Image 1 (cartoon, rainbow, N blue to C red):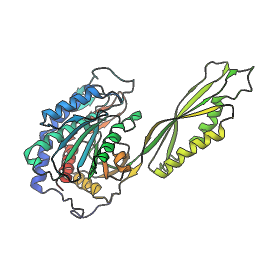
Image 2 (image 1 turned 180 degrees about the vertical axis):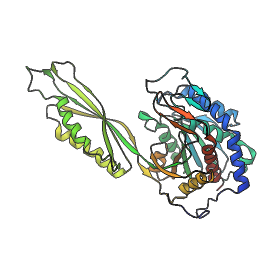
Image 3 (image 1 turned 45 degrees about the vertical axis):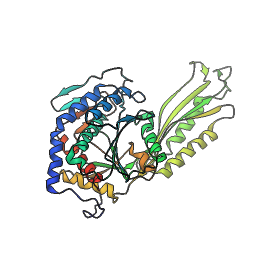
Image 4 (image 1 turned 90 degrees about the vertical axis):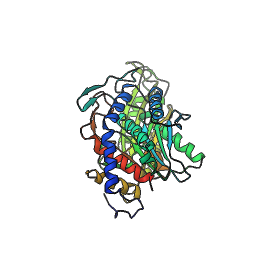
Length: 398
């Protein structure tokens, strides 16, 4: 990852004494952050039903001294620290979690064995939300609040995962634009980690293609156009549009269904396609090519329908950008080696609108995301929490 000289971008690294104070703050909040992480994870928050967890976040922000916390029209929890008319720093962490066996009701079982905690959503994004609450406590503390030169917006978003399609982030940035607010920078706080700096946003296009026809008896009406046969040809052609090695665009048919009987020509069938990539141009080309393939391969007696299940814009922030370089310095300051990464997060929306944005982990280690076996290890949590605090304070003080 390319580096610039310290101070060349106007965002200087904290001095030794102040840097030690930031580390002390991370150490002091380590246990509290983990407690909040577990508390939040225990409350189910499937995509589209995040309200119970949102209420917990609201309560924690009020307990941290906020008098500005509110729910917006889509259910995001929004809080503002500091005042002024300069462009704000925005920190986002998503409320929703993925549950492998379907949406749970009520409490989610959490199992702790020393520093290791197991539960679906414990890392993604229980960790990010807990770190957001830690930021709220620190930004209200006098020694931190006195350094704020720009407002800091803390936003717990709905609908980040899967078919949520970044709904909360879209709504927040849409409303900010209507109010004439143009953020200085955006940090999506997502999951554990202390080395990766996500400044390449993976875009995606999710599409369902449905073919319908008259159907009929598989012998008597053998001449009838078969939707599954047509979709079989479409699947073979669609799979060739992506390149898993270059990864500028990857195409997968992820689900398919159709037919009414073992002995009947199907009346309908559908497939779902997940297209992902880092190139906005290639994503758009594949999007159009999928529709051209359907038009070419569908017999005249069948009717094609398209249902867009999700669109996430791709984007990139150059490694030399001041925001990325500030994150590099914060990572190095806690003794870690910064690593450029590619992912999809709330930062996608900001990047697609020309707003500098990155995504960072909030400390600790983890694995098994989006499964019932997800786990989080708090052993080295201070490093990532320290990095996040340093970066936020540096950006908010500039």
